Amino acid sequence: MRINGTAFIVAALVATVGALAFPVWTYADRSGTGQANVAAGTVNTQWGPLTASDRDLIVRVRLAGLWELPAGQQALQRAPSQAVKEAGDHLIVGHTDLDKRVRIVAAQLGVELPNQPNEQQQGWLREMSAASGAEYEYKFVNLLRSAHGKIFPAIGTVRNTTRNTLVRQLASDANQTVLDHITVLEKTGKVDFDAIANDAVAGTTASPTGPPAPVPGQVASSAPAAGPSGDVGVTSRPSPGEPGTVNTGRPDPVDSAGVLR
Image 1 (cartoon, rainbow, N blue to C red):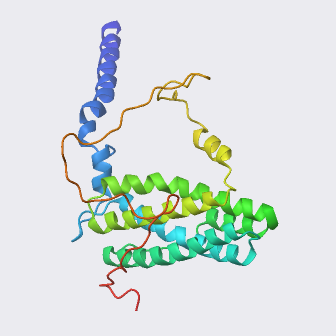
Image 2: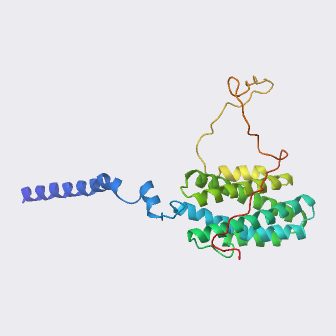
């Protein structure tokens, strides 16, 4: 009985170790890895593969317009200051144009779009509607500036990784529009940068990186100019426009699917 019991225990241990080891050596072939997750949500189109992240950006661009357009219209009607009215004007113009583009792209790629803001965005609209005067302007500027700041890096990530030419162009268009809106919202002078910074670092644990903090009273050495070596002829110029402005002029989209008819 002692021998049989020992043999049983050994067999059980071997089985347990085998069970634990099995997922380790098969993990590379199982779903859950980065490439497997991307492949699982990807469909092929004539413009290139369309991933879940691509589709998410398309939907987020549409959602942005669904709440920022009425927010901009409300600002034109209710904002006491001209600077906030100007921001509302930019929201209306920018998202009217961007919504045309995203609807065309979505139709070409077969992506279903929402027709109303999500619950969080509806809450932001209610929050602004309940305010007035200076409080209204503060909420308008900071709710919108925070939302734009959060989608800005998401646009860059998709622009960098997408293999779909339509999504890449939409990301470029969205990038221009979002940067313009960030710029005009900051121009109001009502952005609470401390609140944005505190919200961005909430929950982070990594130590900050970068050059050391400057020493009070000590003048930092001047960095040499960066430029090409030798006699190099160039023809391009920095983007047009006055400092603090964003050039959003671009041709109308090609509506091959007849979305705008």
